Length: 363
Image (cartoon, rainbow, N blue to C red; front, side):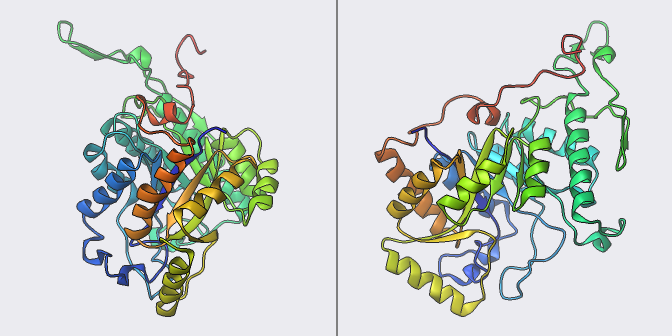
């Protein structure tokens, strides 16, 4: 069996709205770079493949939990120079931002992290009034717009050839203008001439991720992304979902986890948190031990999944249970690495570095 990819999804004090009230939580530090750096360093020490950072243009839905957040891309940029191996994947809202801005932000993150950037794209039918843009769209239009958005971003990443910067002090030529390209994208949602103002990212194309719950979003993922996160209820559901998705290199299952030394302790902790705040989630919830979680992941993996994105119920408790409990358990079974190899996030995911679509050889 090949080793599953492992990611963690970071959001506030954890995915349970009462997590900020736990004794080991750090609610006064949620808006500091140190807090996020500590979490990502813990994930990196645990050899995880990547972390994702949640984002939204609206406040969190529960009044009992953390309210307010930092910008995900800027968190990743702050963490980038303080880490060295783990992938950094912020969430961006395609419905209320411009692809030109996001293309250069993620390209900059790829430079800051020396090739470890990715981006999770999220279409949102909410919060249009928050940013003064057009009225909300239906699902089909939102997904069509998101697909065009990703296409524009990818073209902008390619608008500089890899060797466009020549830095020739003798002639005073910093850039070979023949290797900068207009993208001339014209579609229903965007009309973008380009080129980008940021040179092509170190990875050429940072990996694109999306979360999908249903067939229309699976179709979007097939058109536009490299990794899709899905939300199966159990192993049979995982098999049914992966059978519906073709052409996406990787399918990861999302799972919210509450981990302790015994299954009873994990269940008791979740019950105590539930007494403090109501908890709903779009994923299956695992309460138990790292050993039990390893059993579940390996049983689900054979249903066509290549990895998992784990959502820690409370931070740092469930993150350290993943890095110091689950990872050693998988290592002991011979299904998880004991060190990082060299290379970029694309390399780790087995994605080749794409040719530039505008270079002479590619044309």
